[in-house]
Length: 175
Image (cartoon, rainbow, N blue to C red; front, side):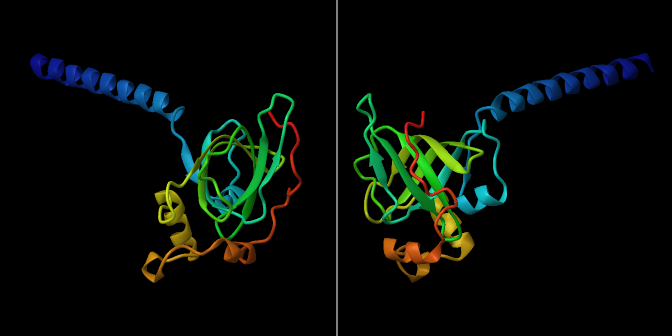
């Protein structure tokens, strides 16, 4: 009987150690996970301003505004839409060479309580047929695009699908 009780407590101790290790790993990974969100998802459930997220969608045609700053690096602001909502993005830096209005984009950064997205990195597509998987999935989920019926909608149709963002003013000297 003592042997069985000893084995039982040994198994309990091993399982406790394993559960503790899994808990520590999950806690460590939770701070490095970056979620992908669309403008409609951000408007529906705004993330905290300290949570890094990837914003994906299409750049609204005519929404790009560049302003030079004192240090010579431009401040860019543009709107990203998923066809249901648009969100103003502010970026301090040089945009990628392939960045275009009406094309898909993924921006890494933080949602600000004032209603805009502060991007620390902007990723653009690499050719005319490419669209990031997350953006394509979001467009399919909202019913704005089905790949069986051809390429994604052109830039002009995005302007008709969504209303302008609430905060469409150009941001100056945003850090």
